[in-house]
Length: 350
Image 1 (cartoon, rainbow, N blue to C red):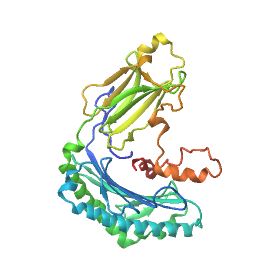
Image 2: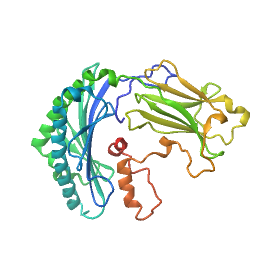
Image 3: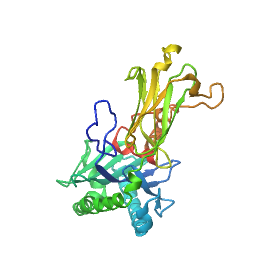
Image 4: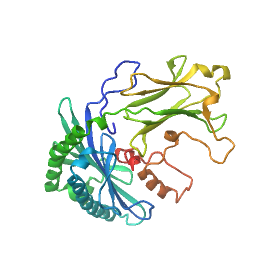
């Protein structure tokens, strides 16, 4: 689902998939009400890697990573800056219209838009998409074939409160998503192919909060994000007593992931029978770490304690925003359902 199309497994025992699809995606968020976040945020990614960012404070788009194409063609930055300013005004007007229509003029509200395209470099097939989300729930999706907007909600008439849904703008959006967007994407992929296809090995470590807590196997600093992390016993993968986290982005463009093993019922002499295995697309050999108490990092007894980063999660921006509303009722409550849709799931990249 999310950023890429996964292909067939290399073999039954292999957990990593190959990729032939590339993507250029734009994630846009407009908020209203009291919040510590910027009112507007925009981000562009190629194959899950951020290439640029803008917000209502820093209007000029800022490139991310070492993209050659942005060095060779600085006009791309101007193009992103122009669209950042334009889109900010559009989303703000849309959000105000929705709040008026839904009689929700008070409190914190979030309108998100995700649009972009995918290009399969094997079949040369192009796919475009645009979706809206409101307060953490899917709102509208455009079918580019029929040029019709659909909503999972009963109040499907909300589309008339979004300026892009009129016939003329829908035609313009389809033209961009099916023509200009793929051209941009192919330019990025071809000019920065070595950057996109690089392989970076992770550092793998064991973390544990307390002597009775699960042991967290944490891998960080790897690239690309086509990776897997799992536990084995006597050379065979196990699932019982294992809780696997998500792959999350680091600020430097690499990724991290974790997997916890419940060791409370494992005899000390049996620990050596367990190991944590990391697999990465581009690496010919697995990175295997045998469970060993002497290698576990812990701050037990100190004020700060280590944790399993991708298990506890640095909450995505939209979840934090939405949870802020719930904390007025229960300050300690953190919901994990707020981001159960495609809009929220990509906001951890901010």
